[in-house]
Length: 358
Ligand code: AMP
Ligand code: MG
Image (cartoon, rainbow, N blue to C red):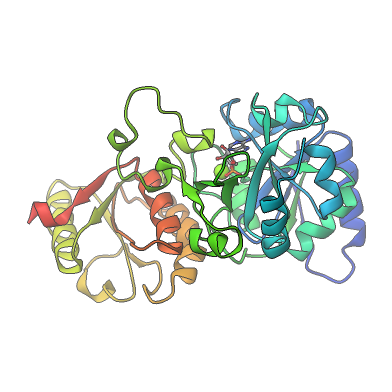
């Protein structure tokens, strides 16, 4: 199959949206930009179309998809009920980077929800995404448009790297704004529970609906913290290795100076063994390291820039011959937590405490 890329930022993109909508209604896949990352869309009401998403991504079939809608009227048919707190959150944060989990209606096939009785729904805040969704006339199930396990795509070129020959159409809206996936909140729980951290933080949610709980998978720093017993993350996707670059990747936490010292020491050790080493650091620490592959992901003062750069920095390492990547940690409860959650998973939970090492 040939994959077409169509620019949708021009004035006269109406025909492209019409064509994309037709493809979706015919049960085909279309990749499209949102404000978080690029999505790989299919008709959410068509289990067979949703199955194509799993095939194109190589995604485990128990990892459910998020249904994307363009207006509130589209929510009602998908869910059994809309809790009042969900209405409040929708009013405040939709369209925006917030996904809410509801009890699903009969209309939503299990092929979309990974066999669950709940459905995840989001209204993206991106003009191209909204116009595309309106042209579809059906809710669009869409996970991130990457091969399962790889960093999520933040440009149409990233999508092409993973989906070339597998899908008919990529809508190119340029680089996305936020760069990490939506916050997921389970509205079937009381209090509502964050299953995946994102741009919308716990504090922002609590301002609107009062207490909000956090699933332990969100803050876990090691697989062992999750326990080996019967613990199952409520967002099934959280249990899989994600966002991973091809090189071996490990993160360092601890005081700033100890982290820098530990990374420099490890870099020397790896290089002594002939291994090409890359470093992911920040503007504040970049001049403390030496080497060709020292990449600043942004300033610690501007976590929004770090979120926006995160996945392209990880992907760009795949185009180099770097074999080992050493990364600095991020802290905090807000966006820092969402960034760190992605990095720890990208590193397969390889997190080294530099304060202990020194
Ligand atoms: P992605 O868009 O690729 O980040 O994947 C969607 C994420 O939403 C995955 O982590 C899923 O596990 C999560 N998700 C989707 N539907 C549900 C649901 N019904 N319950 C819990 N998590 C969900
Ligand atoms: Mg994903």
